[in-house]
Length: 242
Image (cartoon, rainbow, N blue to C red):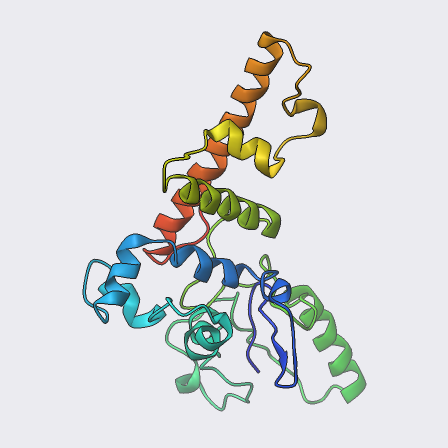
């Protein structure tokens, strides 16, 4: 069974697809989305894997297609899923079967006297297991386990922030094209990035208007900076790391 450290995207069935908003709840979707904004990586895709990001391209492939579901099934699962352990649950018959390199975080070696009754052995084993392996079933715990994914997530994040930063960045890039370039504070006002009292009002005097515009510009600038950092990180195999 494939497992992930973080929420993974779901797509529904062939006849009942899940909306894009469901995939957007996964950080893996946003890794793909940010990577698609990296000019060097897109240039590498354009050249069929040759270029500045050739090494990463071997794993992530072409991300220019808008269909995330296709890319996820072809590439994403393998990149982000936890790797299956090479060690199996079994009885060890002798010291030669003990792995050369092992850690208490990965193994439990037990001395089990078979003269004990089964009920007692189960009790002792369950107590030890609860102490050493307290994680519940389901998605692996970040604190109880080490990730074995080929590309683990780095740093903390919220889905809301990943989404908003990219929305602001995309709007900023749109306004760089053409003659009607918006100022940073204008983008912030358009997108309603601050609470109502902090937004520009026709009744504001000059001083209040200046303060509000500066605050909006700083907010937009901060989101753009975070987005650019993530876009750069995505192209070197790290995300989100801000």
